[in-house]
Image (tube, rainbow, N blue to C red; front, side, top):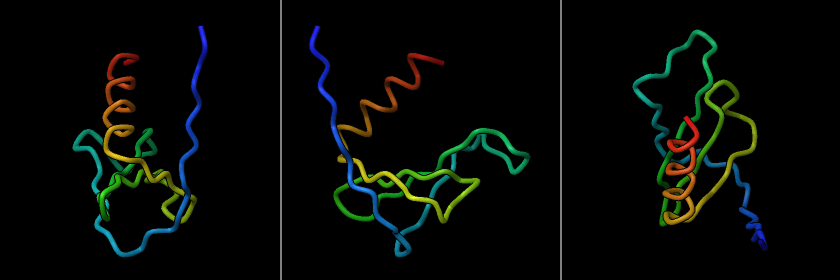
Length: 72
């Protein structure tokens, strides 16, 4: 079976509002934040907001969410 890899742009985004899951807390749990700055979805580590982030097209973001739900 052939696996296709995608590469995603990494950018610093300071002009959008970041959203965190309601299940997240500030006690060191694993968490990411998401933002929709344009026609893409930005994803970052909430514990390290200055670190690089992923900028995904909406389809790739839905695939990522589906895969994370499937694995949980």
